[in-house]
Length: 179
Image (tube, rainbow, N blue to C red; front, side, top):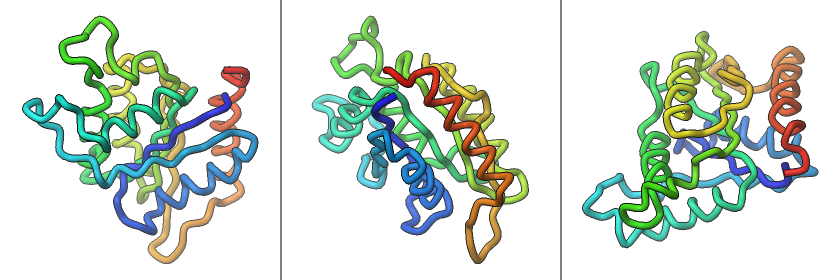
């Protein structure tokens, strides 16, 4: 892979999940990594789908150029945060009205999942995302991905967590290295 887009399901400026996105970006120095901001996307509404809002077009263009997508998400009440679900709803729609044959920019894209959460390590959100991404026709690499716990003061990867993340990186990047 030469280009990865990271979607973070948290709007909080210093969220642990955004910190994880930065850690991943720093580990992938030989790859172009783009962390996409989801905070300007309007709520999905079929009445406003066309013409497509510029914020959605910008994210679609980033996804089209990418070889893979890395989704990093907190777990809100055991589910996918609204901002991330909304972005995936927009991205799952065709770019051209009623062009269901071509499909969405997500179709057949390689994707992997990570989460920073409490004791569950985001297992519920990773499970929900895995099912959703399969429904969207994506190629989910590394099954449920990786989950990490946090404490309320800091977020740092332990040696074990760093090894898990490194294994996920290798599994996600290596088979698609020349993409």
